Image 1 (tube, rainbow, N blue to C red):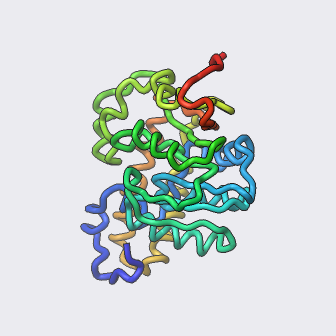
Image 2 (cartoon, one colour):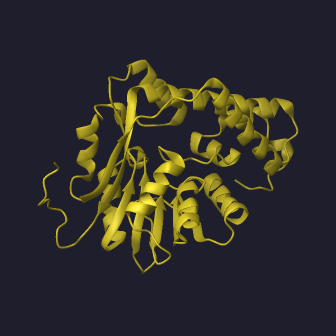
Image 3 (spheres, helix red, strand yellow):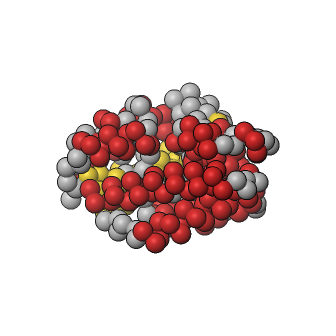
Length: 281
């Protein structure tokens, strides 16, 4: 996305045709992990994140997690995402909301991302690993980029009851989430992805759906800011952006009835990985 995009090109049709990741980037939606600030506070605390830490956020979208962790702990690091729109806004947000943090962002494919020579102490996966085409491969890439004794910070969703096929299809069509991401991802199946790491901390959480009033206030706040960023004063374009975001948030809100999530602090040690010598309970 270019912030110099001429207003005449920002039409209702333009808004509707943006892919989900590019729409998120265009409106500068802060794509938070499950649990938002509370999850980040747990991650920073239980992974002992400090100003000496070097973090990487994979699939960072508009940079919320890495940016706010840097604010919390004064750590340094970077994030990457495939969406140019999202990375443009990640850099905008860093400059506007945390100008004193040492965080940078770049457009990159996770499977081909070339990290700096110095490895990371923490890698933030949030809840997005399952959205990669090959989550196990991406997690293996994370291991390659971690220091010995480093941490992977994850907050995966898992289902607590069957998800109707029609609803799964709707999530797929709206958000671009692979349909197989909705197949049998109960707690134990979800945790299989992480079973080669030491689980230093875990808690399970039940998300509370938002009210319609809360959803609408959130959407209004996001779209009002997006219109200021892009100098949009066309009411039809505003309405198209607002209605699309509201529809997305209503759909995600509905998914809360089928899911819980856990916050995970996973440690990687060369002397142990990929074996497990400690029982789970």
